[in-house]
Length: 143
Image (cartoon, rainbow, N blue to C red; front, side, top):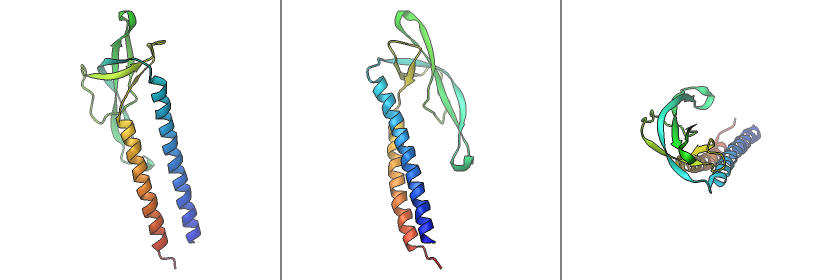
């Protein structure tokens, strides 16, 4: 019976590692892609609302994604929507930093250090969880 528990534990760890690697690679690809793009201050014009749920879809949390506009080359105004969620409604008129593709100003990304912090915290959490759960399985009485 313990063998089955260890197999389930290993599958969970593989899934957690795969999810973390996928997220880290996606963030790194975007960071590398936008590394040479100029940064501009964009004005928040509003937000779109969405939901983020916890495991199993229970206890959903309301999240807001800022919509913004900035002035590009030639004085043309461009709009965008951030991929960075916020628990509070962003204040219209405030400013955020966005990276703008110089070849196509319609393409812009809101840069946030929160994503890196979140990935780092998730890695630490899953490492501690893996060790603790492995230890717990070892002392779990089977009878």
